[in-house]
Image 1: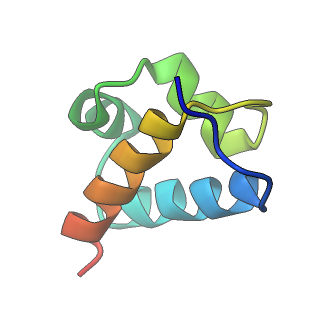
Image 2: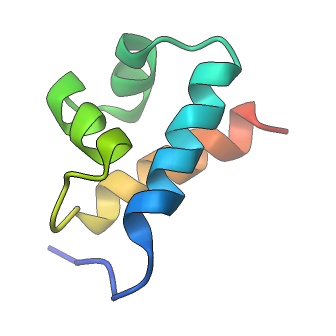
Length: 69
């Protein structure tokens, strides 16, 4: 499984999740659309995910790209 290189991931991910929530999506909707558990999404949003999977970040980035246009 690919891991994210060292860069400020927590703030970047939390910002995208915040944008998605601002657009009207609930935490449950974001989790469902990204195929992530609500717990995983919450940890990512809080910056508590210590070693997030690259695939999780890509899923959030893709949804953010669709919604935040």
